[in-house]
Length: 356
Image (cartoon, rainbow, N blue to C red; front, side, top):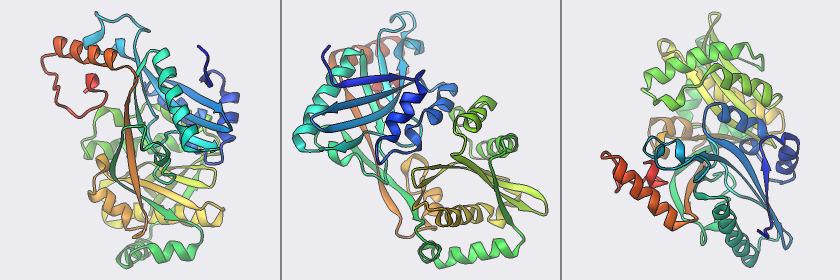
């Protein structure tokens, strides 16, 4: 097949990261080391798609999943027959560089659909980057859906950080300091064992689904494969670690990755102080943005409101895309799931529907 696409396999880590870093807007979610941990977690086989034509370059990373591994498909579909794709946990979507004319973007999208179909990738679910709004160039081509907002902190200066925090939340931070909460940070991998214990307790309290529990190997991968791009910020009270957050750093931006706190110390507001110190660290080390993410399921819940307290002006629109590259095969899979699984809800909004 004559194509302007190049599929860079996961095994070629050097070429992978060199290609990613050649894009001005690259970020942590595209790097080989970031996807390594989620490969271990079982999210799929990572691939990098690179496109170049007519002075336009495009790049995206995906986790590729074999549909034959689904319970309802095991006796019906041989392995390595049909696949679907999802951008890695967090944020992603297509990065562009060069001549992003409407004609070039249209040509790219046409070739993208053909390429995915040629690889027997039936559908793709894309989570776009709120701070980039990189879905904008594809609104007329992809099935882009607006969800809730995420929150980011402008870390250009310490003064801007303080001014954007709501007054009552500045009081909360001062109270945490007065109560003897201290913040430290480290990239010592041994601390990840403590983090996992605190994080898992937090997930237990929140009745999290199994996906949000990570094995030790997942954390080992963060320490090894993202070396120099992560830190643990943690809160101490009377010598005890009471809250911890894994923070990621890349290309002038900071990301709030995973976090946990001990319930019995909740009144000390340790996580508030952690995030404040991360933002200050950003201002002091030439990072211009600290992205906190949004609420559960992109809703404006208590988690979203907590994050918004750090920047009353920090809302960023979060969008997803649902794209199908082969309607006939997609419908075949939906009908197969329907025939094999009496619990299947064909009216679900889940995408791809056959996984709902």
